[in-house]
Length: 462
Image (tube, rainbow, N blue to C red; front, side):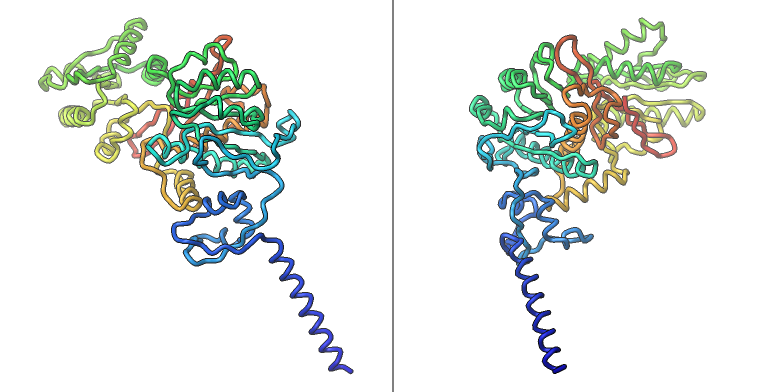
């Protein structure tokens, strides 16, 4: 009798185990055999699911050092009933919306529902514009993933708005009018039609890169990140005056006929003269005795070149190092240009030695743990490194999306992007918007990258 009971118990356990296993198999759509060069991002895209849904179905992907390898079998879950929150860059002129055929009308309170975002950028691999914008878009997706931790959900729709795209055709997609935020376009000629569309449907339009358009002055729905040369020259001069108000400025002529820094130098000199600040003018070709006379022995000196060329910077550092040998107590700082951020390999030691300040609209510290974590996360998600541009486009996309989506979630249509409204520390690209009269909102954020004499790099956001 005991033997029969034991067999019955084992049979029951076997049946229960089999049913559980079947239930687990049935909870997934299929097992997928990984092919060469496939990525988590691509597999999620092809199956209409989010990256997170794929990871949740395959917990081993969360293990440190996990790599997707050819021949591995992974579980493909059934798509959720909601549209995928992280679609990949579409290769056609418009994204193909999944069910339902019409957007669902949801609450206007963005604290009670997902923030609906549209990406209208050139998302293709045909040229540099497309490749950069695909990387930017990936940064947006990473921001959406991070926002989940803050309890903020998103619904992302992407359209490949190439340079020759018919923007009117794209805007006929019913999902376009359903967005809370549209990020784009990249090309100036598409701004007018897209601007009229967002105004009609009360959507916020976030223009992330350089454009030439006057819509910022008469369209209150526009957030424009790009700052033109005139605006930046005045902003950088303001930062100069704040940082060096008690110093002696020295402007060095580098005889660069191709220099684009004449506007900044003119603005700086005009402001110094207006403030009654005495400054010196000299040249890289000036002899040592005349060069030495331009420097103050009682005040800190701040040196400005009228060019951003690395070769002239090299000559300037040589002259300054020679001056320091004869006058070791001389106090000197340098005030540079955004291009100098590309020269750290050649000039880093001198940047530190001469207490260098570099103004810019973006900066991602290579020494930051946060930077390293972001690079690893990008590599893990997309199985490749970010492109080696001075501005890392994935980090820019992350900052832009995190700032705007969190702001809209917190304030809804009342979000103006002002300083302190979101409480977000940027990874690379600071944002601080101000209203342009009765028009849209213009980014006014700048940053000073300071190479200190004790070999540190500090970032000062404005």
